[in-house]
Image (tube, rainbow, N blue to C red; front, side, top):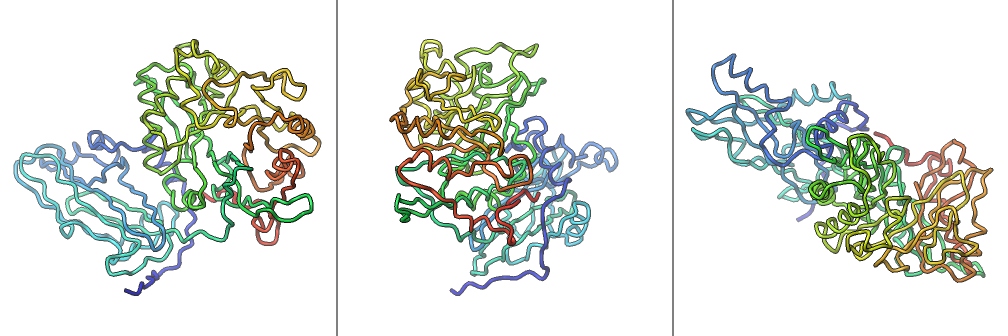
Length: 528
């Protein structure tokens, strides 16, 4: 059947800058900082309920509409244009068991669209009727003697059952129950993302990016396209780079009341996750592996002082984020944890290895687990006895130097050639037991101010003397150019590639960075 493209009546200019929406996203994880629970148990305690007050006023049980897995009754859905469908589970909840059964009818209240847009400074369009369906025609029953109805499905279609395709845009479906409560379903339909060369996956080059989501749109990672040139300047390959992209910053938070270390996505990462198809999926579709980078939150607790119970709890939180949003793994970088604060255990040498082992057991063999080798938290990773018999490297896919600073020359962190004149004496490290040297990145670069010495000469000598064991290149916070002290400085990823591969040259294809005639200035700065 021929597919028809459905064009809504209103042209959208939605740029999701609403502070209210971001605040709602944060409120949804106040105690957990992670994700709304998929359990129903505590939903009625939050803001939408008001169930006891209503019961006092009317003498009857209050009944409200709920969305499963959402504490604020706002559900965010992302679908690719021309894709399939997804479902939202809704149900009714009463303040106490009903003496007689109740029937509630759902309706789509168009007036709520305008109210929502006004309050949140958004420009959603009402989701057209051909692109949603509600079980049982929107009729929901709560049987006598119960407090909750069965769950009903609301299906949201990018392509509906008769083949109509919903045009890319931002839509709202406000569902109102006849006896109280509203669920808002926010739908983003994302147009296909194309026009980039394929990701390079050859053995001569493996690149890892970090990207700071407080500054840049994740899609920036797709703009790094390079040419590999022979000594005679013939093109060997012309491809995108960035095999792994670590998105930061996610932190270890702490809830004192429950004594739980909490995974805190922060407002930027939470917003991006809630709009995964818009911001992350285009990067994922290129073949890149997307990982969350977890760092310390300065609260006094981190990977090195969790109890066994806390480790299990924290790993489950990490797993929930990775599986719910479709990330490919996790990068662990234990810095800024604030160890030594009063009331928290001292650092030990078994907690971090246990955490890594538990992550591997829970995530399985196909998700990435990588570590930034940095300071005291990993300095004992060579000593299996200190780690309680855990051969930590066998649970890791990769590790690399966590020593990167735009105010000092490149530090070659090479655990396998300690004592060499080219290897850093400022930050000595030992090999991670169980991890092959082919999977350890010794050179981690960032942006260097024009007046700084980058240290590339030392890297050349290190390579020329046969000390490089692999083709791993690590880049801290890839970015487009912005007007700061690094504006005219050095480091684009192709520069390190040319330094490590001394027999060939690499050139950045700046056509991918062109932005309204201004070459890669300020491109992909965040717009939320």
